[in-house]
Length: 95
Image (cartoon, rainbow, N blue to C red):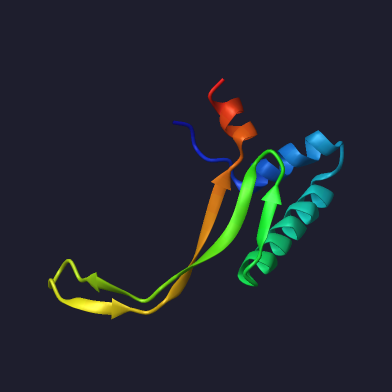
């Protein structure tokens, strides 16, 4: 398995694909990240066409066990970020 692409590499690839400079590509990436973060944190969902859907799911309070001590305790309700991968991306990866 290859190493994941870094932000610098992603910005360079975006700049090349857009025929723009790296500063503009970096600003675009930061803007997209900010919009996704704001929307998902507010409880909404964001669909990236051809990539997938990013959304937030609430988890109820539940009982968990500390593996070191074996003690059971209640974990408070929290939220979890989920990503559903688009069929187009799955098809592209699987050939």
